[in-house]
Image (cartoon, rainbow, N blue to C red; front, side, top):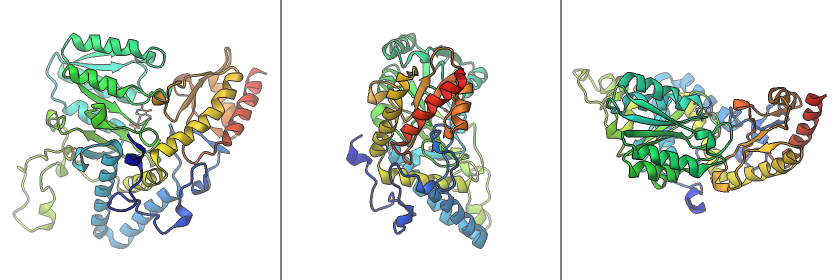
Length: 421
Ligand SMILES: Cc1ncc(COP(=O)(O)O)c(C=O)c1O
């Protein structure tokens, strides 16, 4: 996507809502003033859970205060807020419109709903990748067992070292036929490697398969253009790179993919005109209303209103800073850690190719160093990071200053000394 395409709209329905007249709530790259109270000296675990900014907290408080004052009468305001959020999410991923977005509880819920609703035929095949976060495996395995579908597991762990090899394996598998869907993560959670979605999408479509993407390790940090990349479904949660809270996420389905879903998961709000019986008089309570034909049928009941207020506030900050600017800033932070870390004997999993990079910098410690003991020591010294799948992962975001990298490097050196002693 071009820089202009990613620039935050200054006016209109996508313009940031909360902060127009509040300079104290203006985000600045490399400045964590909006994260008052955050305890770690350096916070680099946004790929795990992002701390909520003051703006996120304010959005949630505003919602609760409104409901506290008005009760049910507050509902329309926040339903409108969610409509605005759907617009912004559609814009974020280049979706054709808000009707292709359903708000969900989390990434997993979006994956499970598609896995259960897809029009599987016995003997169909679904392609998964080893090394995936289980959220993008378990629902497909469950659906496979239920609908008589064969799971084909390709060696996705090879992506960072042999992308062409994995793509060749995928093509060979697709050529064998019967593959209906390929499920992949945009960014691998343990290596930070950004998958070549456009290539995967092209292969899928050339062989009549659909591409499902778990985007939770990417969105909020790297751009995604579902139409350009040929992505049919996207599931994403709010609490990582989008910097919202747990309990919110969204699902995208392309207009061509929605008809492939049978509403096996549906609730009272899945119907056309579902709520008229509550507000528009007698004789409207019916149990034969058709199920909505857009992906919104999966929003079958009341949602976590607070979490979606939070998500819009966090997304507004990112859009306001500019996605591309945020990505470039975070690469500077990671550059400043990666070089010295290599000198200390760490192996970096970060790609040389910026198009394969994400916000995560994942390292393997020098031979013989226990990664768990090392990470505990690093955290004890005030640097928040994680060890998914045994990799040491630093995941800075826009509030991290480039000079925080110095602290991280000092801490790495010191922690190595402690663990080796
Ligand atoms: C790639 C990936 N997918 C899914 C999840 C789980 O997300 P959720 O809890 O939103 O379902 C995680 C991490 O928690 C992840 O790293």
